[in-house]
Amino acid sequence: MQQSFYNLDRPKTNLERLLILTSLLALSISGCGSAPKEVADAQTRQGGQQDRRPASVDVAVARTASLQSGLEYVGTTQPYRQVSLRTQVEGQLLSLRVDVGDPVSQGQVLAQLDDKVLRTAVLEATAEVAALESEVAQAQTQVSDGLRQVESARVQFQQAQADAARLEKLYRAGAIAQQEAEQARTNARTNQQALRSAQEVVRTRQQAVKAAKRRVTAQQAVIARERERQSYTTLTSPVTGIVTERVSEPGNLAQAGSEVLKLGDFSQVKVSVQVSELELSKIRARQSVQVRLDAFPKDVFRGQVSRISPVADSTARLVPVEVTMPNVGRRIGSGLLARVNFGQQTANTIGVPESAFQTNRKRGARQNSSNASSDREPSQRQAGILYVLKGSDKQAKVTARNVTLGRRQDGQVEVLTGLNPGDRFVTRSSKPLKDGDPVQLSILSEPSKPSKRS
Image 1 (tube, rainbow, N blue to C red):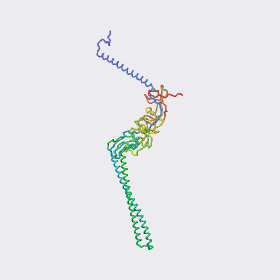
Image 2 (image 1 turned 135 degrees about the vertical axis):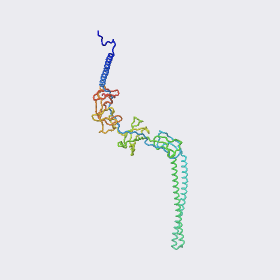
Image 3 (image 1 turned 180 degrees about the vertical axis):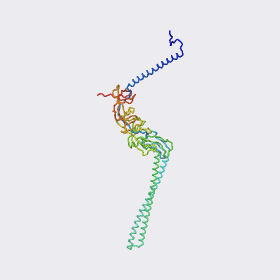
Image 4 (image 1 turned 45 degrees about the vertical axis):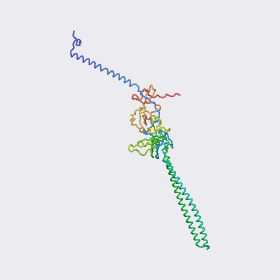
């Protein structure tokens, strides 16, 4: 019987061993190459099934709302008026009747200084006035005496004139000698001189009375001044407001001009912001603005541009603009962060998230939210594509709509045309969409409003 070449029972040569190992290695390689091909085919089939599944989308309902557009700047609230209560005279601070946060009224007594020195000065000035008034009384008495002397001299002068006239007639008639007539005329002239002297004395005494009265008036002014200085020791509020700072304490020696309290008038609140010179043309005096405070995030306040500074910063080119707004209930304090928007509200506008849009590439308008202006002119408005839901929620499909975009703010875009209130649109999709694609609504989708039955 012929012996087989592949008889495994006989000893094998080195060449035979090499041939057997080569055959086994070839069989192993061919077997391993078939497995990746099967896996790839399975993955291809599974991917095809996934592509055929509807895209998962988030759906929202279009609604009209007010979109605030324009410039927004950050400032700090301040009281409408801020007053420093300072002393006008020197003295020790005896008491302070208010503290920080206390409301005060105009004319209310807030603090008291020691007034001993000023009270003494008032008493001394009053005593001096009494002495001067006594001098005035004496001078007036002397004037009265002089007036009586004038009256007596006038009577004597009139009598002497009458005697001289009578004797003059007798002399001309030859009844008396010439010497008697001349003596009568001399006596009349003497009485006339005495009358003039008495009148001059009266005028001098009257001048003395006037001077004494002026001294009294001046001293009375001194009394008024000292009393006024004494009144300065009682510190009263010049405004109705709130104590914002307590600068001094009782026991301190206050000099003239020392600050004791700071008061703020919070009937209104003002906010000062720095506006770029490039935006200054859009702001005008008495313009209505919107103010938001981080301290009251749910409230929106309305203010008015009360002042536009005529001087801009020469380096930063910023212009200070002051906005004033009412403070009902004194809720708003000082130092709060305020966000001032100088834009106008656009009413009855549909606003949708920017993520819901796809750029209308056919028109060559590429949307870029980071570079988009918040207030576009009509000629600069962009067109976009928005996918609107059609059909029921279980068998929903999307329709591509061309829409016109308007202003942008806080991630919201104004839709001018192409979308109506109540339309349901896609805000997010798990994969790219095209017109007519079926979609599956996610749990984050907003449900449609049920129709009302009559």
